[in-house]
Length: 280
Image (cartoon, rainbow, N blue to C red; front, side):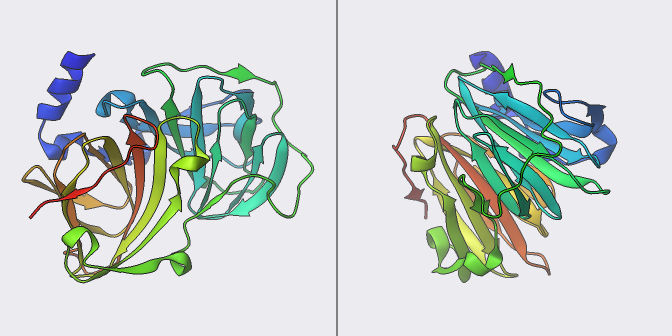
């Protein structure tokens, strides 16, 4: 495992970036769901050294979804970017409009159902207590026709631009970014540490920095530009996922003409031990 991680780290940056490609989606059913998903692995667990497990990029087909199930050794999060879906968490269900996510904490049953007649864009993220460990217990319940509660009685993550706050010279970068920590480490039982929302207008940047004890995945929600990791620069665009390993010096500049919007996943080596070192 260590050897494969080292090899992955030596690949060119452009080859380490995951690209959303609907041509690579494969149809399947998930945890006794009512209908089909179309999915690909955007970022495998081997991409990071911490207990990150996977990032799947999918479409939930009309009247399809992920059936009701538990995990006892891992956590995951369902995220939709547009339209609506019916999220179940802890056995209770609410209909949520994207962009929104709901963390599925250990030992809490969860599911998602697309009640509409069009596909819903979807990400599933997972972090484990033991590297490479996946477990699931299915409840044979597709949640079709579940009673909906008008307000979700579970934790949700809004990726709403209106909630962002100005961050001047973010991590020593140029201009004023828009930033928000959408979920803090207290939300999770695993070493999953945060979900950040970052927006860079044209000409602004996130400055060079590194984390001794935290790894990240930058997911591009919209726009296109460049990312720099350990002196290498690569182009990024909507649907890309960029892995950032421990101590990687990284930065993002919006050199494009449109807004660059990012979702950042942070996973720590040790619970609650977070660090950021700005690099000149």
